[in-house]
Image 1 (cartoon, rainbow, N blue to C red):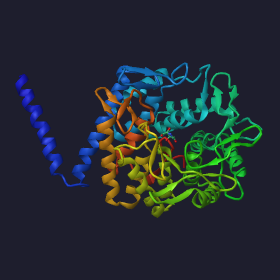
Image 2: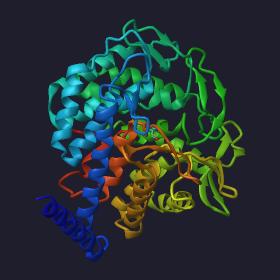
Image 3: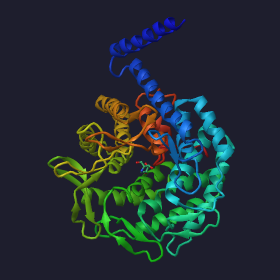
Image 4: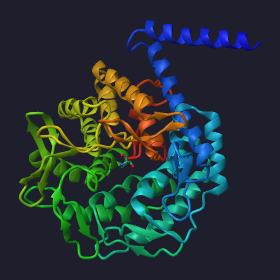
Length: 455
Ligand code: DMJ
């Protein structure tokens, strides 16, 4: 019996490998094989969460433990993973996550949370789950969370405080950044649409406008940090990286999702500032650097893994030529060591921060180019990106982040966005159109699809 089983396994493995070698690159057969491989990777990562971190926020696969962001868990991984499970049609995993969410997720917790992260991952995850799955309990949870976070908007300028206690509503954190002011406009907007209560969107949009009104009128750029009580900038470094990134992303996506013309006008002004002062044709390629928001003078030539998101935004804005140029640089950054480092100085492509947090942005931008151009080089790069994650981030018990892309030393942790974004984008290169069609929705900054189905 045992030997028959072994023969069967060997026969199946050789069938898969012969099959994999024989299939034509880009063919449906190849896509099917890759789609199954990405699903298996996702399932392996989920299994690690189930085994070692059940009910917690995130998993540490090597030490076989889990961890929470705050004093009590908010089920970051299952909520973030759910939309990917729906798109991959993973019924068993969906049931497991759903049961856990409805049994344990409760926001009445006396603890202070970071409004932006919770909005994009948890509120975004729940709203998207509601649209994909139809279970009204997802929307109830999202609304409860949204209501508890609303006190953040009660500042003199309308820009939200960074932190809020989910039980008391006490707010803190008057120094914030454009990203944490504006990058929940899609989530609050969806909540408004789905609950027929415009207040969520209106309050959030007030903050978005407050940042825009404080841009430099010379460069049209915004800075890194701003005080929500005084409206003064406390750090005038302008860039497209963390702290600003999704502010820009949501101006365009807000227009595309809600048809709000004011957002489109703001986006058109901002994109010009970015093109005029941050875009940089250097000897090593086309990048976006940093500049002083008032003078527009270049202050640094740092480009990071987070900055890669901009390629996807350019695609949505129909600027494919610029997206292509940027992706050539990004793909160079990715292949240099087999995974992208967190941060480089692009003058000589020197590594400034060597870790890889299993982030999605480079894979995301490359996927948008594949979707919008059908140019096979982006499909091939999608395969390369997935293979490098398989090779370098995979451990016996799941997937982890990397401490240094030069040595591929493992980092015993896995962010929930690996489930929400990294795996989802990898899958989308190969997924059948009926599983997912990018033209039918807008992905929030955590890759949770939002549909205009409120109409
Ligand atoms: C995610 O939480 C979101 O994509 C966010 O916009 C930026 N950081 C991570 C992924 O890198």
